[in-house]
Every structure is written in C-alpha cells, then in structure tokens.
Length: 177
Image 1 (cartoon, rainbow, N blue to C red):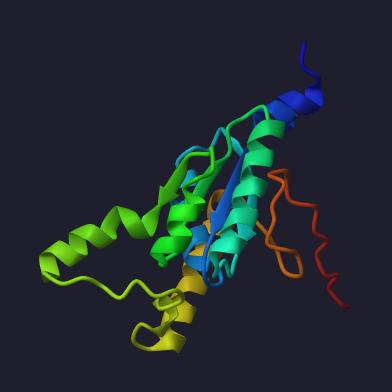
Image 2: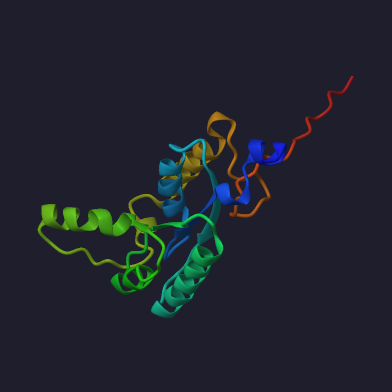
C-alpha cells in the first residue's frame, strides 16, 4: 500500500528520468522537450540537461551515463536531443534509451524542400538572425513553460535539474507601516 506522501507526490518508481542533450546550451532541447512533457500532467519527471556535447568521446560518456540511468531506474529514461553533428548524433543514438532527435526528425525534410544539404554544424542555432531576439524569445518560452498552471521547473538561483517534486514554499515580503 502506498503512503500518503507517495500518493501526493508519487513514489520513486513513478518518476520518469528525462535527459536534454545538446551540442550547445541545451535551451532548445529543454524547451522543445518540455513543450511535449507538459502534455502529461499526471507524470513526474526528473529532468537533467547535458549541454556542450561536441565530440564523439563526450557523446560516448553521455551514452554510458544514459545506459546506467536505464539500468538503475524502474522507468525507461526519455532522451531529447538537438545535436547537429552527424557523428555526435549517431553516437548518442547508441544508447539503449529512446531518443527524440529534434534535429534529425526535421532536417531531411528541410533539405528536401530546399534541394540542398545543410552544413550540420554544432551550435549554429544561436547564430540565427538577431541573437538578442532569439535569446529573449527562448527565455520567454522557458519562463512560460516553467510557470504554466502553477508548475515550476526551477526558480531563481536553482540549478538546471528538477527532481520533479513540489516547489518549496515562498515567503512574501512584509508590508511596511
């Protein structure tokens, strides 16, 4: 029988490990992945961002970490990636975890429409158009996802990892007479 705490917050076996992988900051992988995850409000996610995977060797280390997580977790981990390098992406796909590869899912279609192959270089996304506009938009999207319906993925001063539990209580400033 489940305890009251488990019924309210779920047990460890209810938590789905989620990894966001990128050859850059990880903001795009995290934002697009979270846009999908918010469609499952009854599930709890243990989110981990692994940014700046720029070599095959680094990708191998990440694959080993993902496979350990699969072996240690009662739930199958979910992986989202936006890595552009073909070599890095191919290495990341060696994991035994399911991988949602945002780059690979759409690049072939875009190349087909444009009738040319893209350069597939890492960290090119942040060079698109106006960098300040891009960063502002990504921050706005991330803020919206994090605070939608009272959910909070992380708050000021916290790391980029969310254990999936409830937000800590916040105190309000006292009004002065």
